[in-house]
Image 1: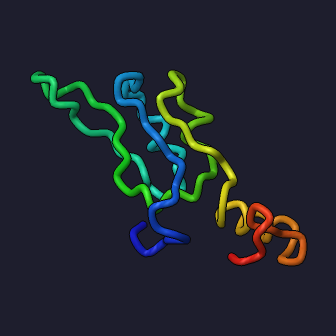
Image 2 (image 1 turned 30 degrees about the horizontal axis):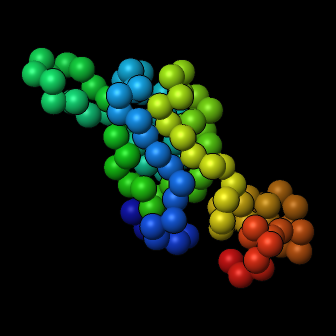
Image 3 (image 1 turned 90 degrees about the vertical axis):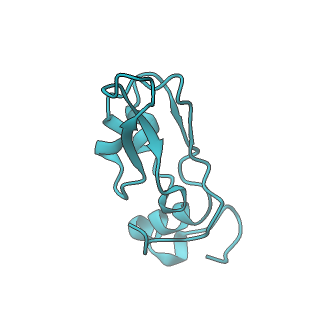
Length: 104
């Protein structure tokens, strides 16, 4: 989802490849296709692990981290403009704020 961006270079999404077991849950629940499973390069070619493919596409909803059975994925859900946009969907624009900054 390359055309979907709020701000570049601010996502809190992190992945610990050593903790990843390659289950693919993060790829299934991400609404923006930020994660993908790829061969991990350990010879056999069959072992896959998650990889962050589009960090700036992350809206920090937390679905990947909440569904990761090994806690290999970490994100602070609802920070920055993602929080603002979600709040406006739920409560309306007047009720929303962007971490105390009404700038988004």
